[in-house]
Length: 198
Length: 248
Image (cartoon, rainbow over all chains, first blue to last red; front, side, top):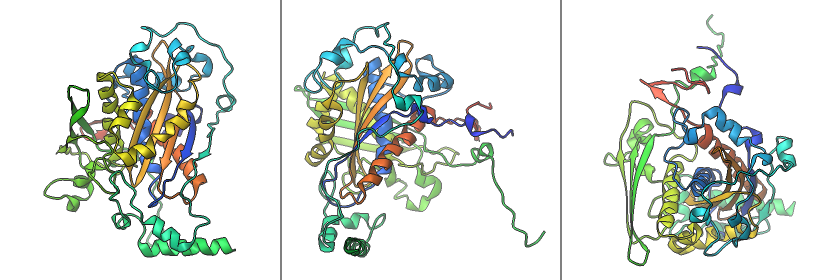
């Protein structure tokens, strides 16, 4: 078995990373997970965008190497993901004229897209983050809401026990197996209270 | 040499041959509308490997693996099904192979969210509805309130910068609501570029918002890497793709 280097290892490279705008919008209640739920929405959001563009669903995930979508090999797909802005088509009419929301807004590409993408290209200067090979978190937004710092310990303990689920039936006890116990939450709250005094 | 410590390091190529991998699953989904285009029924049958059967068979209950329903549960922190559908059946036909399935990050929420969210888009398309409006109509009140505020504030606030198409996805998992909108461009040759992603997270109480922002951004490195390059194939139990170059 021949040992190779990481240049043959297939992960997304930094130049391929899209801009990510993050909105943190805590509504209160128990401290939930952040990383794993977010990983799960990455693929379907992109797949739905691809389906909107191609008007057909992509049935296999991950994108297959030996049965490439759109006739692309994995190598070509890597080149694809690293396309610069200058490789991107000019916007079709719908995206310029349609309101962002409403009956013809979000996702309205379906059915209203011209039969073929425009052949024209818009040579524009790639944004700096692509040139530099850096990805950026462009619009960090904090929507406000439930934060811990500044709250009294008793309030934190109460807050962390508030159900946080679509049906409102998730309780702190549901999370004991994977998360904090009530005592642990109280300890955290006390620690924060101490940190505030320092 | 007794008493002399030995450090063993597998090469990546060797390591890739004896790992446990994300379970292989597929899903058949069927939806039913009434005369007024209201979604009144959904049947979701997942078929595939059970991680518990591979690694923790003691956790099986009556031969079934409850963990495969992460993100689809009626209630609970592992992830609640966020849509309000009068007739809902989600079942799992366990089909285990001789290959070991393991706990890839996100575990079963990953493929379950792909199944649900991509099919929701297909359902919306079938009745000619906007995917966002279709979701808003179906989401349970608390889910709707939390996870649909985001696009108005972010993606929808501006026109697409270029020729891009947008896709939505949302879920409730591990006691958090998460939603994402992707802007994707495809050139005439069919090549895809992910331009931008707007992600909103409602984790309940935010202890450290700055850390949350970074973890959300990093999750897309992980999730998109899996989507674009995460394929691995096996042939007669020998993982065939130890590197980007297939070895079989």
